[in-house]
Image (cartoon, rainbow, N blue to C red; front, side):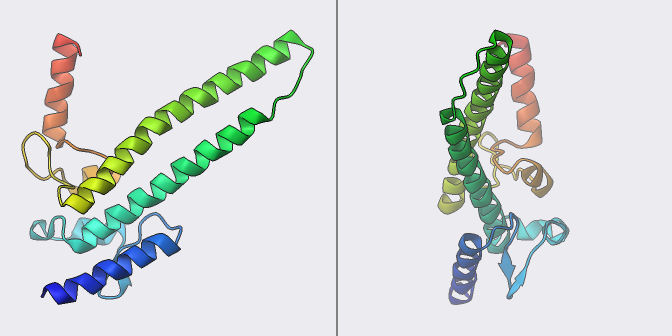
Length: 164
């Protein structure tokens, strides 16, 4: 059975690197969609097709974040000398906003890379605190999630009550 599953993984990695669609995964030669993954049984949780689906989605997100970072660098290099102080202030504020956005994306990129590493390690989709499944709907909404919904709610409540 292992010999049957390995070709599926190699096909998925080819699909993930050659396409730009964020959600491809291969099962029996066909692409999986979000709907197909949501309809799978609980016993199929984090099977190879689901892991391939999330890995392809995370890799696409990683490429998008890196592309945005490159565009920001190019945009910031295009310095325009404006004599009007109000225009200069507007440009500086836009640059500051863009840098804050890229800083958030840099942090997200780190989480995306950690999620890809956890897929490779076989830990993806399982709560770090409880070891329970995070759940497909939560992972579709936030592919970098490391906690189940209940564990995340407990953590946020503790932070609210006791601070960081």
